[in-house]
Image 1: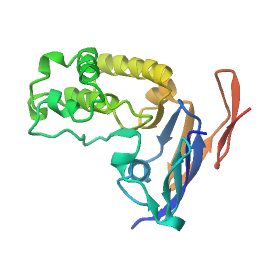
Image 2: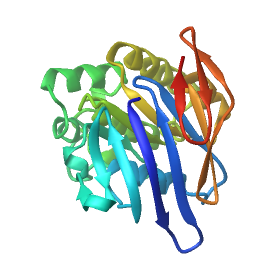
Image 3: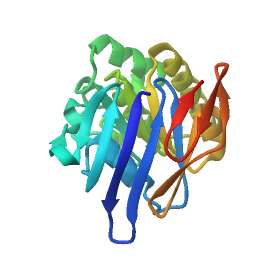
Length: 229
């Protein structure tokens, strides 16, 4: 298993209790009502919040173990994230924002072209549309070449044409790079295209749904784990 999660965290309205694991190079779709804890769960995976108790590991690297007071910060985790509010620096151009995280300059510039942003590369985030900012945030995340990509409503500002192009590109990227995705979306159609596993989040509780057949293997999905046979 690539990502293994078992933790709890007390919030003002309810407690988050998460327990699941997913294979490398697959997509877990988080769904549930607004305010159910989906974004908080992503923030904990990203290392932006600390659970009260539990463990998180990725590709045999332990990121969190509260019993041992172990916490690996976000900058040292092989991940990238795209949140609804965006993470672009407003005083920097799109190109400079992407250069901050790009493993290779050429890769960042290539992605700018693929995502239709090359002509806007020297503009600042406030000088482009919401959809263009969202695409730039995706480029920034991908240019880091993460092993784990966390996506919180990453297509909400995109028109249908650009959304379809981005989703198609993400599917190809995942296949080529074996990147593991965790996606929060209210659009079931988007999750259906990208998702291999579905995790319902309701009042902070998680519940993996149904049995799926992926690449010829059957994954028996329970609340605790997904196991390939």
